[in-house]
Image (cartoon, rainbow, N blue to C red):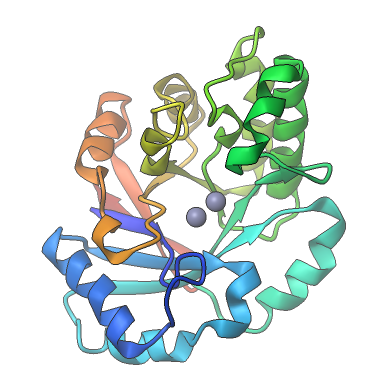
Length: 252
Ligand SMILES: [Zn+2]
Ligand SMILES: [Zn+2]
């Protein structure tokens, strides 16, 4: 099992010290991970000590420790993102859309707007940014693919048709989609993406990976046994890790 979406510093809840790194790696070992992928938010990059992660990882030779980043995607910032990604040889980079047209839609205070807006239009805008993120060539992985559903608002139109262009681009560009378990703890109460989309991803032959989106050590690996089971039920046989941007496949 892998957990390819872990936030070492949370939302600046703690410092990236050797002790903190060990807490995460101990938990990874305890839940039996083969690979753990650190993917802190890009806006905390200056506070991270990525070489220290590499150093502490040497104490855990049984565990593959990958270093990535979760980048907030905005189309007008592609050059800025490209420059940031040149600063470190990341194993993987998660592209995530948390904001569309200057609306940060995943904060608790954004919920009323979700209920007011036209749901189809909201989903269309969201997936158009996901499509741009995939097309940008900046990322190895697409984060929480259907995050826009987090408050439980569903479109009228079939979500597979709304997501079609984004998935087409993801496939063309060779991106991996994560099954992210954090959605189970949001109002929507289900994985990102939902099973119907996972089946479509499987049909298209897009590789998948697993991520808890843990913002604390105790959440590393959370629900990933259930999530692996779901992937298997959807016909997916492998889970994707990374080494220097190259995919590594593990049997589920
Ligand atoms: Zn995210
Ligand atoms: Zn995250």
